Length: 200
Image 1 (spheres, one colour):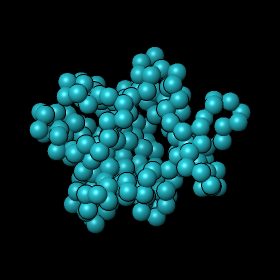
Image 2: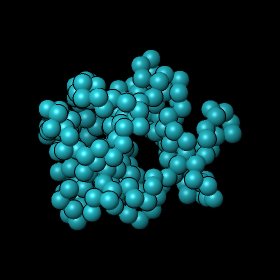
Image 3: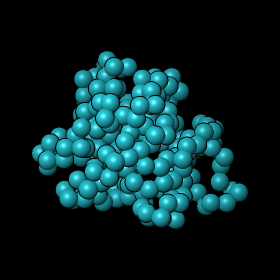
Image 4: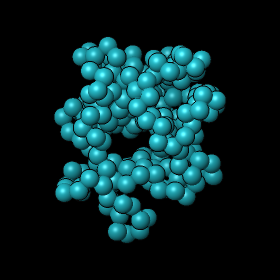
């Protein structure tokens, strides 16, 4: 685990904060070199495609994706330390790929079937990850971002560059969030581990 999670990261605190607040963010969470390796593994297996969704994490072992399997098993063990209600809290993964200059997402909430844990990991690239207060998304499912003064001001934001992580804990609330404009020269690649009600 010490070779994957950065020495200055505090994973227990990171996950406990998510349980208390519905979200947590951590820059410099895992080794960026692992992100490069997983990116290559995803590409080789045909998964490095935007909107790759609801794939079983058992595919990592089946496709010989050593680094992806290692990161997933490490984070799953960390989640199980703070939440003993499930022995397999992150059975699925998704991949998002954003081009430079692209707005990552709208302001949105996760589908209620996702969770209670979702952990996002930036493999490559750089863009803000933003969380908003509940009243900023009251009556509609999504809110487009325009990159101007009309955009809502985030409750909290993080520069989600390579090696960063965020967690959403949806058991008690669905937190509005978004990915901002990709301002790296390379595409942003995001790997998300999560549970779903379909797997319970």
